[in-house]
Length: 482
Ligand SMILES: *Cc1c(COP(=O)(O)O)cnc(C)c1O
Image (cartoon, rainbow, N blue to C red):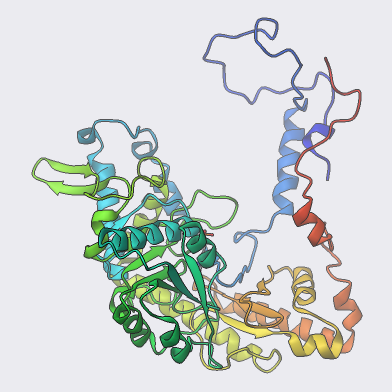
């Protein structure tokens, strides 16, 4: 596809820019000495350019997108509509508090609902993403131990099924990571956990249901082991789709939780944001929360810094409009709709898992939560077709591939999360596509190995693309105008 610089030509222009409402400056009087490389295209060429770009992208509005652990679910458009209200967009963070009472109420109400859903006592909306929330939560844990002069607690225990951001955040927060192996059943190995927990344990970071889609049946014993050792328990709630409105991290024994509003609560995920990774905590940690917190007073809502705050982790109140979307979503679904969404997410995952079992070996065959993991290890050994080959072949079927090669504890992993927003018809079509690919891999593996056959980009050199990405357009020599 041509870049916009390669379209059009000298002198082409259009009038889609709004009227200039500032004094015009000529290039001669400005500091800029070189002419800008601006594309010169007429309106219909611009329209075609962006339509072509949109066609090259695959999003939830195009079709099924079962990217495990990422919850690529459909986000109702009403959430976007409400977040675009001028009452929410045309305000300033330094405006007097009495003039933005409605916005403070949004923050306060969303905080209350999400605290109720997670079983926490307070929450900050400052962090802008999941990993940012993890980092913030770990700083709370650190501040807590330091406040008690308990300085020997330097280690964070993390199960080997964890999302890669967990150990990265722990290291960034200045902790050492201790890897806890999973047992044969995909859950935390209790004996190994007991051996690792001790006087140097600052805390544990855990995802439940974990990244293989299993709810750890020993969860309360796990959190007790950490508490008895004097550590703090951290719940990675990036993806709350399986348990929202049904089981609360607070009741499982967790002290700190982060959520990804951009996975579970109606903000689109992917594409670079904006996101929101609110962090909730039990009351013994709330004095350490970052930023300003809404407080109810007689004269209305005010914003106050917690007494021993760790400081700001982002400017002002985080990505406020993402919170508006989440609150709209919560209000639209209500206390009946939220658990129903979770139940449907689990039902859809089990439906697909059950149907695909006859073809693909499951890493953990028992019923799953919102996602499940298949393994292409045997297929690779027998036919030379690996997880990535299956993913490429699925592109030819018009569906987005599942997550590949994660979690690391399953070889040739394909992790599927259908989400609750898909109909049975869509699931059946996807199941059929997966089965077709499997059968093709048995009969004509070479056809799978050479896929995708119908997409714009086929098999890029992924190592080069990651190590040496080409992110800049190089103008042809001579095109540079002095
Ligand atoms: C997505 C995810 C994260 C990271 O969230 P970001 O917003 O991408 O930083 C962390 N943990 C789990 C389990 C996740 O699924």
